[in-house]
Image 1 (spheres, rainbow, N blue to C red):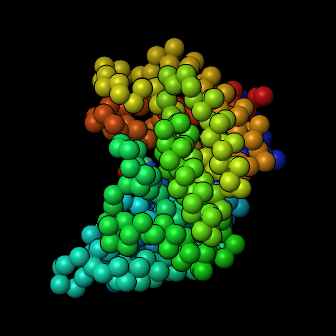
Image 2: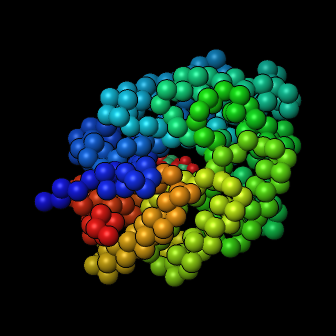
Length: 331
Ligand code: XIL
């Protein structure tokens, strides 16, 4: 029997979070959440297309359930996410004639959206992902192309943070991205954030998504370096979307119906190693969120290979603890 709780074990280190859908608040996942977690991120429910599908219509239902569960059980929420190139409805960028909206109109809509969400969730959200995945990672360019950038211009990041600062109360404001511990993207991200901070942009922290895998030999050294670089900018750090795939990103194999013992052992070791790093840097890392609860369902099930199952989390498909969980509970 496992009596230890993750959240309790790490209470003097950082918050322990999970990404959730409303369905996760029932059954086995509910039990796991109550025992092990003290922070929740709505996996999709707060994204623009879900919560604000039409200009005059918000859909607060799913978040209402997550918020109620959080408050009842003494948990906090990470708000995810205001400005992103994905999962944003087309109306945001179109005017009433169906033409591309003006910069002023898009900013006005963003303000209304951020204000509404900040005011509604002030009592429970401790951090907002204000801008998600803005740094380009395929080409030499610094910033990714997106409707936000195309219409508002490169200053859209600064503008989004300034608006969020007006309404977010005590909540911390984060810039969140993936692969930002890898040297190629660390360098770009550092440049972007440094410049934004020098221009007075109210960014409190950086989110390291941490969609990792068990085969990356450089992970620990890259991670330490990245934490130090971001901390040198005076930023707080959240690990926002942790999962550790059993497949290398380029691996397209589809022949596995369960993880091999070798994979589970490697995975346990990687979880053990990265949590050792998180603990070492507990002064700057204030929250660690897993992107899901158990291997029963995870966004990695179909990504990046359609129809393929993955097993990247701390609990197995039946909600039973994996070796990885034991390793991060006992240190
Ligand atoms: C993913 C969700 O987990 C999926 O359910 C959804 O279909 C697509 O988005 N980076 C992010 C997250 O910032 O919002 C993404 O979440 C995973 C990658």
